[in-house]
Image 1 (cartoon, helix red, strand yellow):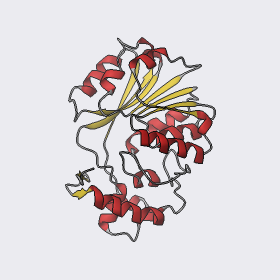
Image 2 (tube, one colour):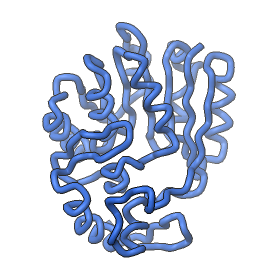
Image 3 (spheres, rainbow, N blue to C red):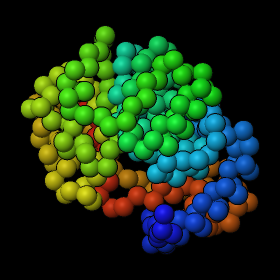
Length: 249
C-alpha cells in the first residue's frame, strides 16, 4: 500500500506509516492486555492489533464512533435474535454485539479475507465464536432469503454499497428490520437523502453527525505529546460522513 496522507480532522495531515508507528507505540501503554477500556463494548479483547481499514486506538479508548453510542446502547437493549453486520472489518461490532446480547446470532460480512480471519480470532478470544457466522460479500439475494427467528438488526458500514443493499423495492422485508447505517455521501452525495426517503414511511429515523473528540476526556492519554493524543482519538474521516438509526414502526 502507498504511504498515503490521512486527514486528522483538524487540518493536520499525517502519513499512514507515521500513524501506524505511533499506534504501535501507544497501544501497549494504553491497554497492555489489548482490552477495550470504554464505550458500549468495554471489556472485549483483541487477539492482536492488526486492523483492517480503521483506526485502532479510538476503539481501545471507547470513543470510536461516539456519535452512535446511544443507538448502540439502544440496540443492545432490544434482545435481537439476529444481527447482520455488513462491513464487519476485524470484528469490533460483530464481537461487541455478540458479547452484549446473549444468544444473538451475528452474521459478519466483509470482502477482505484478512478481516474475516482476524474477526474469527477475535471471536474466539472473547468466547463468542459459536455466535458469529463469517461471510464475504453480502448480496441482495442473500438478504432476501434470510429469516430471523424474532427481530433483527442490520448494522451497515459498506463504503457506499448501502445505496444498493438498503432498498425496500428489492427487499420488502427491510420494513420489519431495524437498521444502523454509516452513510458515505462523500462517495455519492445522494446517499443520505435517498435512504431517508426510502424508509421515511416505515421507520423512525434519527440522524447522527460527526462530533469533535477531546483527548482530555481520556485520562489515560495524559503525559503523551499533543500529536500522540490527537492520533489516539482520530478516526481520519472525510467530510460527508454521517449515520442513521432506522427503527421499524
